Structure formats: C-alpha cells, structure tokens
Length: 543
Ligand code: AMP
Image 1 (tube, protein in one colour):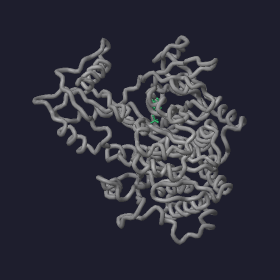
Image 2 (cartoon, rainbow, N blue to C red):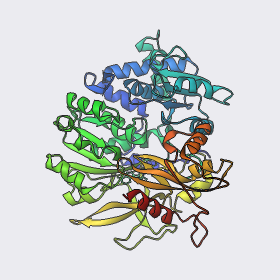
Image 3 (cartoon, rainbow, N blue to C red):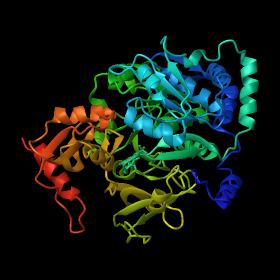
Image 4 (cartoon, helix red, strand yellow):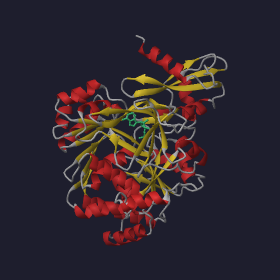
C-alpha cells in the first residue's frame, strides 16, 4: 500500500472528540470565506485579495484545471515563490481535487524527475520570470518523455504556457462553484490532500502524505494555540509552499478568518509590507534571526504581539533583544511529518527562552526514547523525540522498507531529533538538543547528507565522500564535503560543475571541500562524522 492510513480506531476517536472534521480543506476554506467575505485573506507584495474574491478566483482556477481534463486524486507539482497567485493556485488545485506536491522553486531535474515519477504527477505549475533560471523552459523539458506529466501551467505571464490564473476564463463563477462542490462531495476527508516533502535523510527525498481532516486540524490547532482570531494578521517571509508556510502561514490564519501577510525572504521589502499591513504575528526562521538589526524592524513590528522563532536553537541574546523592544516571543518546533510543539501564551519566560514548548494538541503523545530502542530514557536525559497523534503520519508514501525503521512497533514516529524534557513551574517542556539524523539544516532547508554523498560518488574521480554540517553565522549550517579522490585534488568549481550536470538543486551543492587520504571510520565501520564535524568547526572558527 503506497499510503498508510491512520488506524481506524484512532480515526473514530479523533472524530468523536471533535478534533477532525468531515470536510475537505477546500470546503473548510469555502465556509470561512462565506463567513468573512470582506476581510483580507492575503496581502502579498504583488497584490491583495479578500476572502470572497480569493474564493471566487480559486473556484475558477479549479474549473479551468478540471476543464483541461485533470481529475481528482491526480498530483500537481508546484514550483512557485511567495506571490499572491501562489495562494490562488493552492486553493484552486485543492478545489479541483488535485493533490498539490510541495516541491520548491529551487528544485531541478534531479529532484523533480524523481518526485514527479514517484507520485505520478500529471501537471506542473511553474513561475514565470524567476531570476537566474527559466522554470518555464524547465517545465517543458520535464514533460518530454515523462510517463505521467501531461500539462504545465505558468504563474505570471509567459507565451510558452497557459497562465494558471486564466485557465478558468469563460466559466461563470456560479458554474465553477457547482463544479467545485460536486468534486469535493466525491472526496474522502481522510484521503490524501497534499504531498509534503520530508527534510530527508535518505538517498532520495521522501514524500509525506497529508490528509484533509488531519492537515486542517493541524493548522486550526496551531491558530488556537496562539489564541488567534479574525483580527490576526500573520506575516510569513519564508517559502509558503512548505509545511510551515501552508500550516502556520496560510491554513492557520484562514481557519479563523485571519489574514496572511505574505512577504519574501528579503527583509528590505518584507519589513515595510509588515509595517503597512500592521502584521500582528510573525514567524522568523533561522535565516531571519538577525531581523531585529534591520532599520525597518521597529516600524514592521509596531502592531506585532507575538514573534515566533523556529528552525534552530534560539540564542538568548536574540530573545533578550526582542524583549528589550517590548516584543513577546515564543518558539515553535514543527515538521512536515506532523508533530508541532509551541510555547504558547502563558508559558513561563524560561520555557519560552530555553524550550520549544509542549505539543500542540493534548492528544499528541510524545516519548523520549533511547535511540534504536523502544525504551524511554531516564527523566531529564537526552534521547530521540518520538511522537504519535492526531496529525502525525503513519508512513511515508510508497516506502515500506523505510517505514519499518521510522516507527516504533506501536506507531510512534521516530523524528530523528534529540530532545529532553525539562520541568519548569510544574510542567514539562521539550528542548531540542541536536539530532540523530544525518542532514544539514541550511537556513531551514534540509539537505540529506546521504543524497549528496551518493551524488558525489557519481564523479569519476571521487572514491570516498562524507558530507557534514559546517557552522555558518547567517544560515546556521552549510554543507562541507570531505573527499577521497583519485589523482590530483578537485576544486570547488569542478564539484559545482558536477552538481550542475546532474541537475541538482543549488542549495544542496557542497560549499566547501576538504581532501583526505581516507574517510575516518568509527569502530563499527561507519564514517566518523562526529570527528569530521568537529574538524570543520575548528577550521571555520580559526581566524
Ligand atoms: P521540516 O519538515 O522541513 O519542517 O523540518 C523539520 C525538522 O526541522 C525537525 O525534525 C528538526 O530537525 C528541525 N526543526 C524544526 N523546528 C526546530 C526548532 N525549533 N529547533 C530545532 N530544530 C528544529
């Protein structure tokens, strides 16, 4: 079975307790739009839409997609950045019953070729006019000889492909609504709504199926955890077509009739947008941990009552700098696979400073296990964070072998993150203490070390490779590759040319290489990455 469903008994419990609804995401959104027609739904750098208008436009997109022969249950790849049209396309695809695949605009042939075949994608949405790479031409190439891809659409204007926002031209809003309702009526609220991608650790990226009811619950519970209302205006600056973007930036504010203030990673344009639009809440990923130093920060946060920091350990100096400006801040731990932890309003200062908080739902179960076992660690000790609950997956898509290792015998997902429980004022809070999984967290973008190593080994002169995180003041980590080569040492440009030839997304390319006569091994014969990680940390910090 490609998709592992939630156990039937759990589904009954979650529904009986009122956690999961019985509607699809598109229907949940439509109900909210009907309840708040004139409120802002999205304000982006390139325009704004109220709920009624977003609802109407996404209905038309859905009708257009259906008119092109796209059928419910068929996957559509999304390679778009934070534009207004991305939000219209997101709801439009869901309303057509299609399954959006949350690929990144930075992905290239290596990723898209593999993912599109695995999920059997039939359509591909790309953005026109992206800097440095022609995604429209790329979409045309990907379709050539592909077993399932038959349509591509463009966000923005480009003569080479149909514009997603115009596909529904000629359909009346009333006809489009009837069609959307008919499509949604035929969908299962426990069926797959979205394919998210894992911040993976294996040679090929893993696909996470997210189902309608549990995915909407995840977002609605997130909004509840911060006490949001229809007055809330949530600024989101990191990619929207990502799990954090969809859950925290889009579905969560919409679940309460609130607004998404959609910026970009560029603070020069996003902070003035936050100021103009009086954002009340903002999520900063690691790449924005220095946002407070920006001259526009004060104006941007005038109406802000909550700053959420996520993706990496929060430096106390940052927390204190925000506090000195009178800003309340908290933390979030989240993952595409499900589990969220937050330090919600009311959490003690120390919990907000030192921990990522408590699980989003009281139905979440969290255990800290001795790695590789099903034994809980002693209280206060560090172990692997494992979770089970009403929005945490039970299996990756089409990955039976990997799934056998990724879960405990009683269905707890092994996150690969190291954590400990700290008691603060009588309650237990989780703090993240590192990770077991072999990946590089480059400003929130995850790079699987194994994937990069396998790509390096395809070079004719590389006979050994070990990829480790290298500390970086802005991004947190970057990838450093230790190499064993035949013949003279390779240069970084040669490695870059190799990755370009393999059509690998640029953020995965090693940014430094080190040569060794052989890769050091541990007693059990694995690459000794601890030693290499320490080695590169010393080299980077040396004056
Ligand atoms: P993703 O699925 O791409 O959102 O990545 C999830 C992973 O990001 C987690 O398993 C952690 O390794 C990391 N992560 C997310 N939030 C935090 C945080 N607050 N502190 C440390 N690591 C985090």
